[in-house]
Image 1 (cartoon, helix red, strand yellow):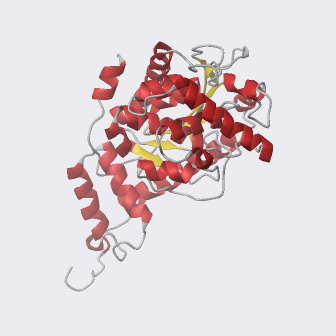
Image 2: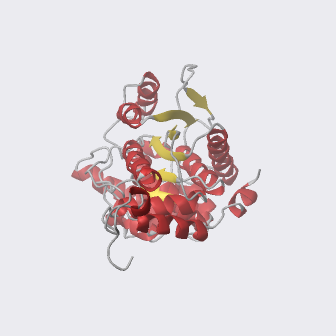
Image 3: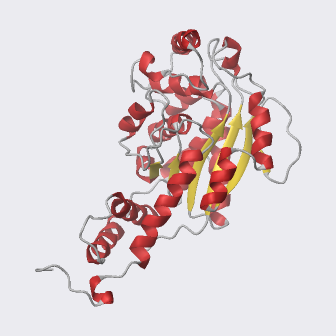
Length: 352
């Protein structure tokens, strides 16, 4: 598989199946529209999967990790080594994503896409290290175009493997100190919003740190001059290896008619790249929640997506994405398991 083949394999939503799902929704024992987003989400899931009775029996969240050279500019409240330390926490099952994934019955797949440190061999770790962290985007491109392509294809192949093993929905999570800066730079380069509206506090930097982050993004854009019409150029000049891997997961899921739930600010930056590369991929992406990170709402508006949840979260890791999976599961179960008026022997409203 090459990148061109991956991009060409993105299908359209199945409108006939969506109409079939809508017809059943209209016949369920409730006033039409009374379950709100659960109804619209179930119809979307039918159109994505091409199945009028979609099931989400197996859920997988990819937590991809990578280090960022831009941390040398002092743009994070945490040191770079926290990336490696948090990956170990994921592997030991002690992070928020582990707890929430257990809660909704999702499998956590941890992937080293470009962590600087050496991680120990672990049965729950997939090592696909493209390099030991990206280059400092203030000084030049984060990675080569070849590395960006390699990371995208790696993510797609991991998505394909999960789907071959029965995954019916994928979620995106990440870990990488410095990745809110890269994501804000991608957002600004696409013209989603002005730099001051793209750059937020990330891990919790103070006012001076926020100013420094904005200056760093301005310099990265000035030095790299990314082409907003070329998703690969944006990714290679401003992105991270974990972001690139998630682009691949999104495109891989879309090409196999499997819904992909994006999490917060960083995974939505991956979605921006994926949709720039393949506009049809947008129809296969579900926004889990509205992050508190500044700029996330503007990203969602650019993508034309409405979030499933709004819980004031800004952790990342895929935490919001797995919670949204439970809502999507409920939506599908309503469509599949709820009785119609005819099945239940209940009179429908007059004229129906």
